[in-house]
Every structure is written in C-alpha cells, then in structure tokens.
Amino acid sequence: MVLTQAESEALLLSLKISTVAVIAALPFALAAAFLLARTRFPGKTFVDGVLHLPLALPPVVVGYLLLITLGTREPVGAWLLTHLGLRLAFTWKGAALAAALITFPFQLRAIRLALAGLDRGLSQAAETLGAGPLDRFVNLVLPLALPGIVAGAITAFAASLGEFGAIITFVSNIPGETQTLPLAIYSALQSPGGEVEAARLSALSIALALVGLTLAELADRRVRALIGQ
Amino acid sequence: MTIEIRLHHRFGAFVLDAAFAIERPGVTALFGPSGAGKSTIANAIAGLFRPAQGRIVIGGRVVFDSSTNIALPPRARRIGYVFQDARLFPHMSVENNLRFGWRRAPERAGAAEFARIVGLLGLDDLLGRKPAKLSGGEKSRVALGRALLASPSLLILDEPLAALDAARKAEILPWLERLRDEAGLPMIYVTHALDEVARLADSIVLLRDGRVVAQGDAFDLLPDLEFANLAGASPLGAVFAAEVAHHRDDGLTELAFDGGTLLVPRLDAESGTRLRVRLRAEDVMLARVVPGAISANNVLSATVAATRAADDIHADVQLRCGNVKIVARITRASFARLEIVPGLAMFAIVKSVIVDSR
Image 1 (tube, each protein chain N blue to C red):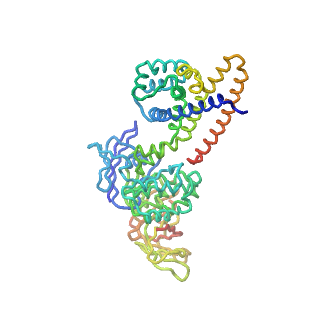
Image 2: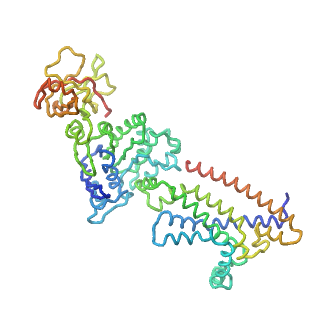
Image 3: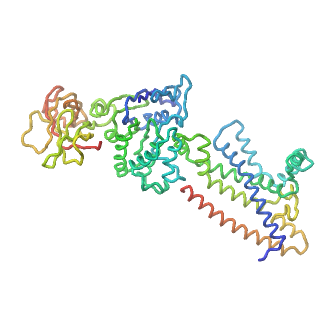
C-alpha cells in the first residue's frame, strides 16, 4: 500500500503529536506520582482525584476547557502568545497539549504503581551506604521504576494516537496542522465517496497499532533485562 | 573505639529499654529470641529507626541524642549494615554494587583496598554478574563486601545467615570469621542462633523482652550455667582461645590453652597460630580419679565451680580448668553417684575437640 501525501502527512502528524504529548507530560507525571506514592499531605485524596480527572471527563470537555483558557483572545492564551510567542489554539502544539492532558493519568498511574512496588529496603540500604535523597532518586528509584515509566509512556502514546474529541474541539481539524489519523478518517467519512479513503486510513491505523505494540513489548523486555528482572 | 547505646521506646505493650557499651573491636553478638528487640536496636544504631528516647555515641561522636535533638541520618553515621536479605541493587552488576558505598565514602579506600576486600571475600569471579544470577551465599558475600567498602567505622550484621540453608551457612561462616580477624573494625552481629554466637562472638549482649539481661565476654558467658538459663538454651560447653604448640610425630597436634594442653588430629596451621576451640558439654565426661587405661587423649584436671539440673535426666556441671570454664553434661544418676559439689577436684575426659579457625 503506497501512501498518498495526505495520508503520510496525517500519519507523521499523529506520531509527532503523540511523541511530544508523552514527553511533555512525563516530568509532570513523574513528579505527581512521586508526590502521591511517597508523601502524605492534607487534601491528598482531592489532588489524586483532580489529577485523574481527564480520565473521567469526556475529551470534548477537556478540549472546551482548553479553548476557553488558551484561545488567543483569552487572557492566558494571549499572554503566552505575546510573551513566549507560543500559539496553541488551532496549531499542532495545541493538539499535543490536549493529547498530553488526556493521557497524563495513564502515565501517572503506571509510574505510581511502579514506585509503590519498589522495595523500600533497597532505599534503606542505599542510605546506609551514604546516598542522599536525590542520589537515591536518580540512581535507584528511577532505574528501578523504568519498566513502569516505559509502560505508562507506551499506554499514553497509544491513547494519544487515538485521541479525537479534545483535539478537534481545541485545535479543530486542519489538514497538515492538526489533522491526525482519527480526524482524517472522520473527514473522509464526512465527504461523499470517502469510504475507500476511510478504509485505507483505518488499515493504516491498525498496522500502526500492531507495529507499536510489538515495539512496546520488545522495549519492555529490554528494560527489564537491563535492571535485572 | 567505644560505642555507647542507650534506648527507650514503647511499641504498644512492648517496651524496648536497653543500654550497653562496646569497648573493643571484634564481634559483639546481639543475641536473643525473636521479638526481643534485636533488629530494632540495630536499626536505631544505623539511623533507620528513631527511638523516642536515648543516646548513641560511636567513637566519641554523638549520632543520636533525644535530649539535644541530635539524630544524624544514616548516611552521616558511617555504619555498614548487612541486611538479612542482602538488599543488593538488582539493576547493578556486582562490581557496581560494591562500588556504590565505596564511591560515596568520605575517605574512599584506595584501589588496593578494593582489590583486597574483593579477594578477602572471594568475589573476583562474580564482579560482572547481576544479583539475580547469584546464589544466596554469594549474595551475602557481596552484601558484606559492599558494606565494608564504604569504609564504615562499625559494621552491623542483622541475621546475615537466617535466610540461608545449613549448607549455605557453612559456606559463609568461614568468610565471617576471616572478616572478624582481618577487618579490624567493631562488628555487631544480630542473631537468635547460639551456634553462630559460639563460633563468632567475642562478647555477648543477651536480650529478652526488650531488655539486656546479660552482657560480657563470650568465653565467660557461653559456659556459664546462669547465662544458659537466661538464654533458655543448653550450655554449649567451653569456648576458649588456644595456640598451636607443636605438631607431634604421631600425627597429633598439641594445643596450649590457659589451663593445660589438648591433643587434636593434625592441624594445618603453624606453631603459634591462635585458634578458637570448643568443647561440647556432651563430649566431656567426669571422673573422680585419674582414669587409667582409656582411649581418650585429653584428660584435664579441673575444679567444680557450679552445678544445675538441666532436665529430668541430665545435670550440667561447670568446672574451672586454669582460667578456662568448661561444662560437662552428665546424667543425674552419675551426678548423685559421684557426689559432685562445688569445690570438688575432678578429671574431665574430653572425647572430642572442635577447632574453629582464627
């Protein structure tokens, strides 16, 4: 199957948006997971709930909320544009942000589970050997939580590829800018005689998913071997 | 180096209230049944547990004092800790495990010292392996090496053999003996196994229900009948130091100790080598007169110091042989027949001598 230019454009855009979404959300997911797994503070249950909100909300609502805060005429959106030159509404960066928000809980949950499953005894051993908190985090916690981090990133990446509602609401459906594979399929189905195009794009999505899942499995094995599991 | 420990902490109905001091290098056994508070004390010394009240001084440095609110974190205490479950870092090779504490030590030991400890513990062939590929005994040795290489001023071993089967224990014990004799640093050895105490300890702190009930030199306490009562165990017999005197032509080696000499099957050790010798109470017979034609090579003259009824059938007799205490376990029938009383001069016939390396 040879891809048309529009098809490969949608494919590459999907990959770009998902990659950026996963990478952008990762540090926040890591910090939030550490906070939830290792500390106690008043209102923790509430914070926990808020962080998982994107999982429970309809994606369209997330897109709408983004639109009314980060639209270029809204205060925050206008500020970002004038001070940082960052335009989010109707751009692929906005699509990445929407995907990052929606898939953030997947990363958070996976990393949090990995952190909770770590043997605290290893941390104690590192303490008696002279390692301070940051040292232990970098040299012990992060490497040992890597399978969880990778698993979370893969799930989030897969979910980002399929994200529809938040993207179309916040950044619309602009070919070459915000039209990812699911949006392209939707457009094809909306136009008369687009069934063949929709079928081709769907087949592409299935192929992408299969390749992605295989790579994910290989990555998981590699990481586990690396940390001696 | 002196180590002073005083702790008080309440866990519900259980109260830990222990104080003791360690005055010299060598192995101090923190000995007692499960639930006596041994590991809690070890954790408090290392800084892994913070007791409500107390004071811990290691070599003149106060590492914990509840009255002045001093509580150094574990990494500032420089105490090596060998955990029962080894706790090797699974994502690092043996070598990187060993170097973990070594790199972080304030005064890092040199490359020669690194090689020496690797050699001392026989780790050369393991350096490239991951912990998951090691046997239980190998893990214990790596954990020992890792703790030692952090240049600690005190080494705590928390039941390092408890997770191992008998064969693995027998494999590790000689390494621990080498460590005791060559590392030259104070060691606190937490255990509930009296045979490990007998083999390794220079001094003993006996704990029961969170309190220190006996403390002293291992050679004094182990043959002590009162200590046996407190420990809820049978006395092990005698444990004392001896020195290789000379090798005889008939295949026997003569050992000199502070109370006479013993003959043992030829030992592969030079004259003057210091050894640790054990005489099990079951292997000592008693006689009121010098026995004539008998096969046993070792007959020691000794004086009865104390006696106790061990059970319905047996009695324990503690004797002094020079400055060494030995114990014989005999039947109560023999005890009555021989009319044994403290002060009586007797002959102890030793059937077998156990020689531990030192």
